[in-house]
Amino acid sequence: DIVMTQSPDSLAVSLGERATINCKSSQSVLHSSNNKNYLAWYQQKPGQPPKLLIYWASTRESGVPDRFSGSGSGTDFTLTISSLQAEDVAVYYCQQYYNTPLTFGGGTRVQIK
Amino acid sequence: QVHLAQSGAEVKKPGASVKLSCKASEYTFTNYAIHWVRQAPGQRLEWMGWINAGNGDTKYSQKFQARVTITKDTSASTAYMELGSLRSEDTAVYYCARDQVVGATVNDVFDYWGQGTLVTVSS
Image (cartoon, rainbow over all chains, first blue to last red; front, top):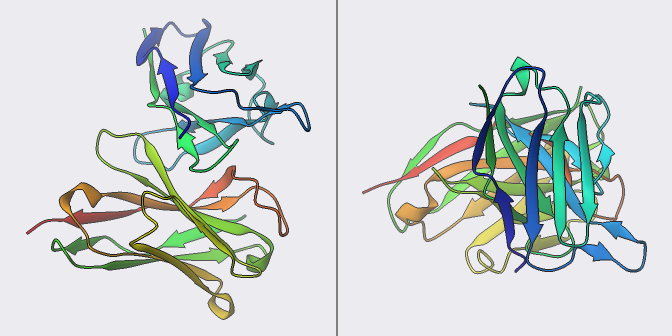
């Protein structure tokens, strides 16, 4: 199974400041056939199901604000919130879909400083 | 707006089975796969398997292969997940989620989620 490791476990950022979340996979999730990284990011607010933010490591889902961006390739990925808003307080998860079983990171809790 | 409505909370004894439902609306049910993902208290999200709502093909995580069955009722636009031989470690919120890609291909990215069903396993 591909193990997904996120860091940090939690972070506190001031409103309007940048938040950066890291995700590392135990093996590459870059598929050589199409040069795509099989990596998605989700946001989960308390009492709600996760919400898809990013797929193919950097493609923003429709309706997701452009302050959210994804980057990285191979085994190392980053989710960046460029200017943190109050509504961004949540837990963020990365997920690999390179192979099954599909696996998720342990989550990163983002709070307001 | 796509909606996945899940059945209500369940309390089960160890060794029992539970069958959860996930009713889809506002899209063509047979055009997308439905996944099941669970979230135990304090644990990461865990993928259990999917069903292609068109042709009925299924794929399960090896961890759950022996005791999970995912089925569908096309006429009711509903997917089901049955988990047997329950143990306390199965206490979790169980989510159904729609696959992102239309058609026979399963992309394994989840674009819409149900609200979740809490299953509590306790003697």
